[in-house]
Length: 334
Image (cartoon, rainbow, N blue to C red; front, side, top):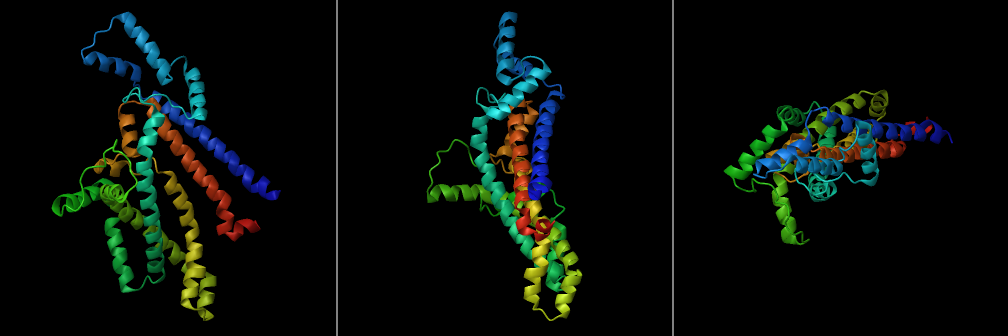
């Protein structure tokens, strides 16, 4: 009973409040930009040589406002938005009209999940293993060399590092394609299709793994160095406990706790975390789709992507909070 009152219920309330505030902010922020997608759509139609009389323009504006959820007062639009959120129906996309936003998400989302989730897990595992060992043996020469290389790679922006990788592996050595995977290709689960996906995804994945792994490496190294100074580690070393046992049972297990939290947050940012990389490699993912939606004032598309991002991040954090007592016994004792 105490667990529900002091631990579970406050986190569920926090979960609901964060979702409410996040979706509310997403609703108002695009409308403060001053862009009117209805007028932009009519201007686009007229720019293609179509002539519309005032009556037809008024009728078209009413139809578009109804389709885009922009009909009525701001409060009515706000209520309509929440109805669409609960139904997971965000209406049609503005710049790819009349394609529904849900259809675009189904098309682009698997590519981002496959790229970002896989590269995040690989970089997390490699970065924590190397960072943990290098942090414990920080005085070794090989540890100092790896740390120096990480210090050089870590500050490089994603777009610069991506361009370097693209030039080396795409133009100089010509080992991988320089363009992104084309949408609309028939999906057939066979060896040829899998190899095609791997060829197109290797360079953006390599960029994310190296840069992401550098971040995990530095964080884990600092955590291990701090844990190594704790009294119980010093006592175990003085008591003659085997060094391998100290590293895995005392140092790494305690240093991993903050990294598990960061992993949940990183996986929750799947919708926006690879935006720059997807643009550099023309990779057909959610990040590239979000960029197009923002630049063209596509309220429905931005709302759909951002709502799913908010739900993913908050749900990942909630699940982590619920399972965190399994990793940290101190929470169970509290």
